[in-house]
Length: 171
Image 1 (tube, helix red, strand yellow):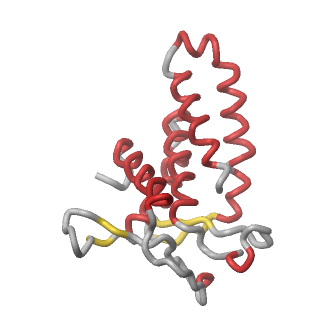
Image 2 (tube, one colour):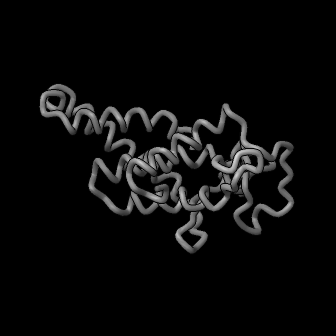
């Protein structure tokens, strides 16, 4: 889902173009091309790796046979890797007025939110792990660092903020 790191700013461009008639007149055709690619090619290829966990929660799994996945193939993606996709789905839901996209974002954000816990040192702050198990496919997963770090955490926080701005999961 690393491709969503590239798709997110493109979707922000599309949203900006579509919301301004002057920009749409200049960049509308290119924005439509980008939108078609993201909607028809990029995001659908990940559908096979999405897992509905029930209760409004969902996650993506590392593709099996993925050369970079190694021993992580078939396991739940770390939070930062699927949360950027959640942002893309929020943007797509807004651009296309499509609640199906918003529902996918909501399921990903719900799973992340379920893994937040109050920080013991600062009761007004939250902490979460870099990677959370979501099902039996994660049994035996051993990962060296439990806490999220700031280089990846910024992606998690960005998704939570966008969810808040769209009124999805975070309030």
